[in-house]
Length: 303
Figure 1 (cartoon, rainbow, N blue to C red):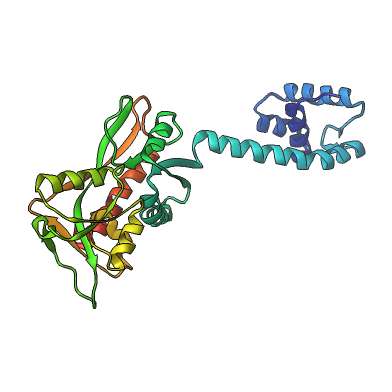
Figure 2 (figure 1 turned 90 degrees about the horizontal axis):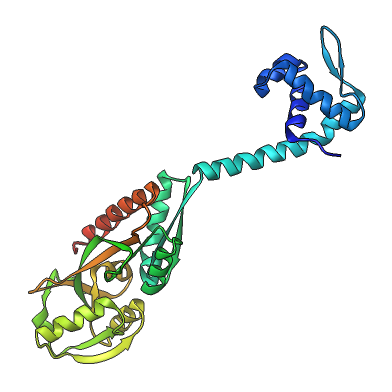
């Protein structure tokens, strides 16, 4: 037996309104068109659905049984269609952001929480991975944008996101206060804990040390910024880190100061697919994130 959802909806509307005229208005068709739908359905079922008089329309016994059986299914269908409509129209939107694991762990979670306080309808999906993996996903359209220290790549739109400076961290012996600034020249002869050379900011640090002919004792070389900071805290040497590393130094026994003479800046970029328009919601989150980072780093006194 075959019948259409339109026939079934016509049946439910007549049962609800007890009137062919009002049901026809609700279905946006003429009363005669509605009558055709009901007659076709009754013919396919083999029994009458309504007892009709000049004054009223009432369900037959079989009509009442059919209404009870089909009502839950029609409600489920309506709810599913509404969810699909909302998703298609963007009422329940999501954006996807990619960044390196350290920023993903130390910066983005709290920023996302604060952002969703005023945009609870917008899901922010986070991917943490290496720079190459982020670029591949941006290029494939799997990420709306990525954040990191990226080089120029064909097909990728690269725009400056935030400018950080380089800082030196030292072990905090006995609660010593932070020193506002340290000259690069003061690092000579000290034990330097470094990251591996695949980090773009470590490459920048090494170039600056070579340019100034500063001879530092080479301490351990590690893969993670958190490990680097932990070794400094354990008095195994000093480290040069970007100022966004202040997020990880909050609860560490280290002192922090900005490196000057010269002041060396590090650019964090936002990358997106050049062939696609950045969604409005992604722009909104990007703007919020800039303000969030500026507020936190600015309050720490180091940009």
